[in-house]
Image 1: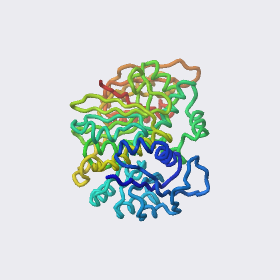
Image 2 (image 1 turned 135 degrees about the horizontal axis):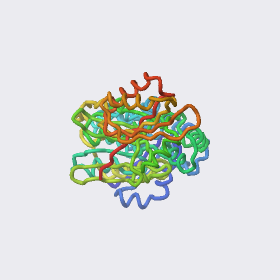
Image 3 (image 1 turned 45 degrees about the vertical axis):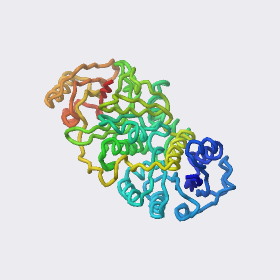
Image 4 (image 1 turned 30 degrees about the horizontal axis):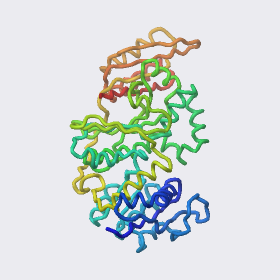
Length: 430
C-alpha cells in the first residue's frame, strides 16, 4: 500500500479548493495517517482561467468532468459538482463503471439515486463515501456506520441547515421579521440559487433521509420525508415561544415506529435550555440516540471550505488505508424497502391564529379542537387594537391528522382571519 493514492477532483468551488489546499499543505500529516501519500493528479471545473487562490499548475485539467473517470492516473474521483442529475450523476456512474472509488459531498444525488449507486459500487467492489454530504464537518455518518454500529438506533435528530438556523436566530436576536432576514441572508450569499432548497427544508431533508438509511438499514427514501419549511414562522411566533421557554428550530427527526419509518423536517419548538435550543447562527447539530450508548450530541460547522473539505478528506484517508465499508453501513442488497409512517408520533402543538373579535369566536375554536379529540393545555389571547384578536393555543399530545382535521373545522367557522400556524413541540428526552 506504499503507492500514492491519486485524486481527480471535479468541481473547484469553495469545497474543491479546500480539498486541494489540505492536500498541498498537510501532505506529510496525511501520508503518516494514511500510510501512503495522497496527491491530486487531475481536476475539472467550468472556468479554467479563474483564480482560486491555490496552485493548480501541477494538475492535468479536464474540461469534461466525466473524463476524470477514464484517466489511468486517478484512483479516486472526488465529486463536488452538485445536483441530483446531469454531470454529477454521469461522473459518479462513469467512475464506478471504470473501477474508481468515489467520494462525494452531493446529498441530492444520493437522496434520489443512492440505492442504485450503492449497489453498483458494491458490485464493482469499490468505495462510495459521502461524509461531506451531511452536516459539513460533523462526522455523523462515520459515527453511525462505525462508532455506534453495535447499537439499535432509537432516534436521529438534528439541525442540518445552517442557513435556516441563521435566519431564525437572527430574527430573534435583532427582532426582525422573516422577510427582512431572508433578504439579508440572500445578500450575504447564504442561500442556494433556489432558496426553497434551504428555507423549504429540502436540503436538510436530503441529509435526514441519508442518515435514516444508515441508522435503520433501509433504502434511501427522500419521498418519505415529511417536509415543512420556515417561511411561515413569524417574529411573533419566536417571541411567544421564548415566553414559554422554547426556541424555534428547523428540526429533522427520524425514528422507526410500529407504523413504519417516520422522517420529518419541520420547524419545531424545542426547550430553550437544551443543546438544540442553545444552537445559534449557522451551526449544525446532530443528535443520535442508541439503545446501548444513550444520547450522543455532535455540534459543528455544517458548511464552508474547511469543515466540508475536512469531511471529504476523512473519506479519502479511509480509502487510502484500505477501509472498505458498504455505502450505507451494510450491503446495499440487504437494505429494506421503507414502510413509511405517514404521520408523526403524537406531540403537543403550538397554534397561533387571528380571530374575528366578536363574542363566541374563541369558544368555536375550542369546540373544533374538542371535537377532534384534542385537549387544550393552555390558551392565551393577546391585547389588540383593531378587529383582530390574536390567540395562542398549546395542546396536549395530539396526532397531526387530528390537528389538521381540527384546523379544517376552524376554517369553516368563519371566525379565523388567515390560516393558523401550527408548530410541533418536540420532546427531546435525555
